[in-house]
Image (cartoon, rainbow, N blue to C red; front, side, top):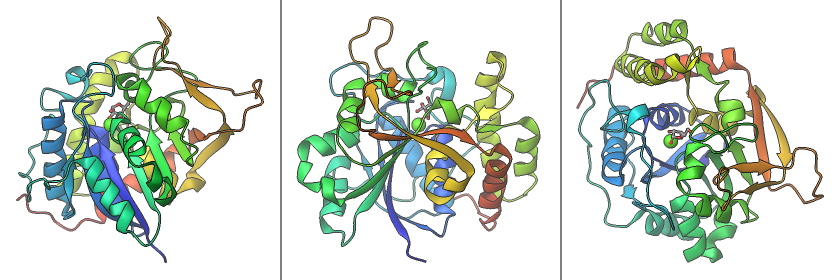
Length: 314
Ligand code: RIB
Ligand code: CA
């Protein structure tokens, strides 16, 4: 099987971490690097968390810190959701390696430039790094095979009534990415809020019995603590759906849509406005994921954590 080269870009973040556990367990993927961005927590915290997750799962690839703040606005962080550290909950090993000297966009540019094949980008946080890459090196667009992102929501928001967190943190960056002409698959809230891990699923994951299973179950429990009082039946593992879109698209229901990002609405800034019925007659720019086979998704997570041998915390 020809492996798919990917760069993981995120703001770990419990669901980023679970997405990376899943990605790292899949034979279809070869992870070239991990880059971080300010989002769920400050860049320093998301970069430290990325190192801890990589150390835990034995992912020994370059790790680079990216943009600390959005292109034009101030950073919003989410301590109420992910905790003061950005990845509160189970103890984790320290990063096995320091970050590389290159800034994230420089690292992404070098990998794209030197790769003998196009690379898939998987942003699961605000799109600041991706937009910065496109602004700085538009010549490298041809080396970007596909962008599988978590963000947005055609029918809903989660940080405001209209906007999802990743897009709202940096709407200008999202606008640049959505206008890029690159193939984009968007795992928005329409599907990610169906990617729910129920309490019984958490126990099923924990019962796998290795260290990864115990830690992933701990992350899910922490994440569910925020969501349960809001009426969620489980923890929505938003970011993992971006990985599912690459390795098991058969579990998903998707549609092509023209989507634009609202930048100036007093109540709607950061909304991803999807032309569901094609009123505008514009060529679709996004493959929008709208549904998921939740049971099969849980099986995928269980299979993923079971694929790790007994991991001794570093
Ligand atoms: O709205 C959910 C998204 O915001 C996820 O990527 C989560 O990690 C946070 O970044
Ligand atoms: Ca994230």
